[in-house]
Length: 143
Length: 374
Image (tube, rainbow over all chains, first blue to last red; front, side):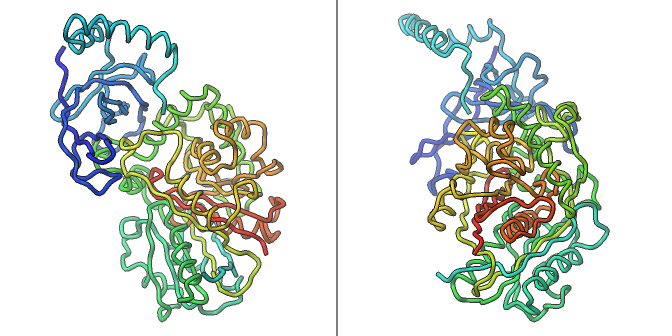
């Protein structure tokens, strides 16, 4: 599985990260700096439009995804079956249009190993992840 | 700052109207002037969100002033998307408060029903961030994202959202100016056609034509504007970290209550911007009218019904009175004035202080106005 890199911007004043890039921070009158974001994250919310605007096929699935680093990203999806707020998704560009897809258990494990790097860190990260999971229980991304 | 009073109020019947936009605005304006016993105001502030595209008219302040027989009265147009009427009220208020004008006519209107729904949705959607729009985001789509987040926070939200529609349709039955005169049940709302999952057709306001107007004056009258506040937020929904609370509403309320020098506990009746049913729940909490997390419960318990502790949207709200965009912010003020002066026939509630909240765009430019009976 290939993880897309998404271009974004970060505000040097307040730290707000946005994607796609923007010249100025929406909340501070300062120029933003470029950042690269990993195209995988958590569903913040999603909807399905049953009468989408002209030029879009019905039903149109739209999701707001929280990327690592804090940016929220809007994208399309092929389906929303089984999707919940907090679900892990990967983001993929097809002809410059971004789509989310639900990550299966295997995909999540691969992503996890790729991200955690060195062996020592891996053990540490696994422990942290398990602890976090136990702590969070069924709680979802707050919005 | 001089005190600013409302000397007259007027509104057209809201709904599918055959008249032109300028006819509707003249009807509301003349009704407000008549109510104030005034032939000519010193100035006019007009609000229309997008007359250029909805009806093809530009230079709109002059257009509408001339049409209503006030070509020689200085006029300007104000626009903050769907809250334009409330913004126009502020502009008129500022002129009177500053002593620049003595009597100002504020009039807002929109004409939409002659266009088909996709075209109306496209024109309203122009107020959405262009990148989000490029993904097909419409107002219902963004409200759908908000509604799902609300439901994730509170499993009872689907029933609570449906109850908003039920209550506001019931109120509109008593308002002869309202777009809809039919009641709906919780089951009808929850079984209505899905628009932007989980948002259904009966959670959404209709497409309406109409106009509303008030006359502001520096002379003592029956109702005083005690506070007006504006609050803003990012154009893009993705640039915000909260979906179930609107910064623009919280900031507007803070500013309005600070100007009025009292708190939400003094509010007896409120007109809120329920373009989508979940917005009434969110706004109740954003404005401090009910404690955080309690809006749904208060709604299901009848606290916001006509005979409740705090009647909300006695006019029927955007949901059932209708939402002719730039008319709405002023239609709310007209209802508040009538409630405060005992003229809300058939739906009168006991009230000395009224609150009106208007949302511009997807809560990017919101207004809160506080009115008090003298």
